[in-house]
Length: 356
Image (cartoon, rainbow, N blue to C red; front, side):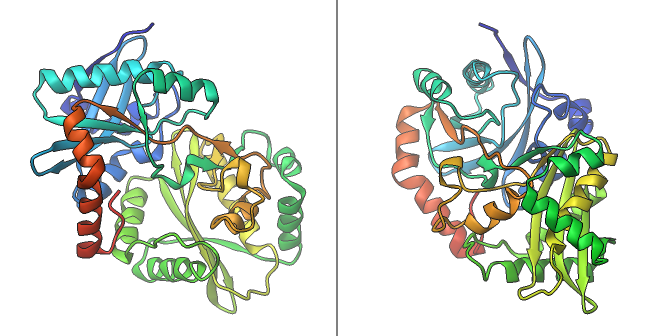
C-alpha cells in the first residue's frame, strides 16, 4: 500500500496554490482553490494548506473551525485529491500523524473526495474506520459532460432535448452576452437566482454579500465569468461559470419566470461550455442533480434542475460523499450528539446562512 506523509505547505507553495492543486491526480476541485479559501475565511473558517508527499504529491485545502472545549474540526472540502480510492485512508492516517506531531488539537477530519460511489468503495472506507455522515456539497451527485470533442461533434453528442433547444434558440436569434463584473450586473444576477427559488428547488440562497464576494474573488483570479441572456431589455437568464484547471463548473444560475425565448437557458450553457473549452477545459460540471436512482422522481427537490442538466448528458455521477475520520472518539461523540447541532443553530441565528 502506498504510504504518504503530511506537512503544512510552504509560503511559496501557498503563493502558487492553484497551480499545485490543479496538478493533483484528480485534476483538482474549484472548492480547493485559493479564491474559495478567501471566501470561506470571510465566513469564519481558517484555511489550512496541507501537502501530502508520497507516490505523488497531493495539495489539499483544509477548512478549520474551532469549538469550545472540543478543539478543531478539519473539513477537507472536496478532497483529498487522490489517484485512487485506496489512497484516501492512507492520506488520512498521514494527516492524523501530522496533527498529533504538531499538537494541533483536531478531533476529526471531514473528507468528501470526488470518487465515484460503489459498494466496494463504501465497504473499504468502513473497514478503514471512516464514518459516513450527511453530504454537504450540492454536486455529490451531478451531471458531468466531456467537452473535449470538436463543437459540431459535441453538439451531436448531447441529449436530443438539449441539442434541439440550442438549435432552435440559435435559429431564433437569441444571444448570450459575457458581462462585466459591475455592481449592477451582480445585483441582476442575484435577483435572477432569487426568482429561481420560486420553483421546486428549496435550497437556501446565501446572502448577496456572500455571492458578490465569491464572484469577485474568482473573476479577479481569472477563473470566473458572468453570462446573461436578455429579453425585453432585461436580463432573463444568468449563469456564473468557472474554469479551474481542466475542469469547468456551472456554479450559479438563475432565470426569470414566464420567458418567451425558447431554449435561452440551453443556449447560455452551450456558450459557456464553448468559452471554457477554448480555455482548455475538457470536463464541465453542471453542479448538482438528484442521485442517479432518483433522477426521475418528480418529488425530489432537484427534479427540475436535474431534468435541465441531464438534457445535456444522460449520465448522473454519484460521488462517495462525506465521511469523517475520527481522531478523538470522545470529542467526536460530543460533537455529533450536540456540538454540531448547536453550532449550526447559533450560526444560523446570527448570520441566517448555512454553517458549512
